[in-house]
Image: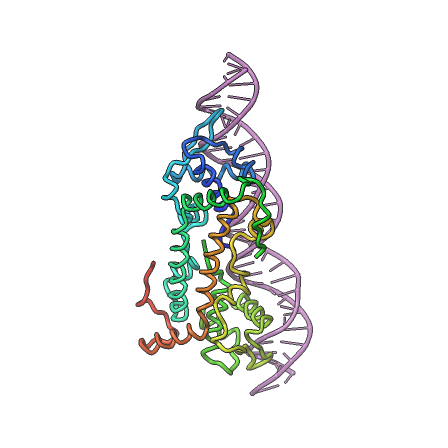
Length: 155
Length: 155
DNA sequence: TTAATTGATATCAATTTAGTATCAGTTTTA
DNA sequence: TAAAACTGATACTAAATTGATATCAATTAA
């Protein structure tokens, strides 16, 4: 059970970069190089975020993307919803067919409770919040955007 | 973002039926008919659960499947793990590559916290618990396994 | 012996996910 | 003004996952 897709992951990390340099344009090339994401794929992700009003762009040389919204107003939940759709359980089975039998209903009720929990947790996490943690981590340790194998838990 | 796949859904509901008639064998045919699940697909799901020791089977006429474990010892988390793998975030990116850069690490930390929350919620829900809710619902309202459009919220 | 059943596979189609390629248009700058 | 560095908009592809079907062998009860 995988929670985040690549698109969501790339989107969040791109937004973190844009938030860190709010007010200036950063090119797809710069983001993809620094964050190690496939260039063309990232372009698609960024364009999708323009459509959703999270960022703006400037064409041509010195162009790129810039954060549009307040980082504290962008939640991970919003980003997930853009790239993976609403946090929900089993699409059709609980929504379209509307509770076929009791065991489905009982199960559905419990699952929907979890849906709320998960959704709420993702809403709590914002780009602004993540960025502050990121900056705090950076000031504690010298390396800024380099590889960091010291804090690696394999989990 | 879909939480449960069909396999997990079918598995849970099949287990609920087996738990309700613990000690006796129920055939795939009976389960698939009552719960409206595709016969061959369900067979695969049931066989997978045998391999994981949740149920046992008896071949031949009057054969079928029987619950092996205590319903209170079977959590939805276990079932998800059988059919969808461990509740985790973005496989490779946080595990295999072990924290490539800081933004990934910070994000990972938050996501892993949610992972714990979600996982914990799924662990709380057991077949036994669901069954009790199911029975309580059934005694409140007459219909046992029939369609139930009265308690339908479209969400 | 036959019908009902599971065991074990093999196969398939649709969807989703991840990624690549291309061409047109825009803007800076040399 | 022309080239280079960009985005906009699509079209395409490959691989993985999901959901489902089909088949044949073995087993068991009646």
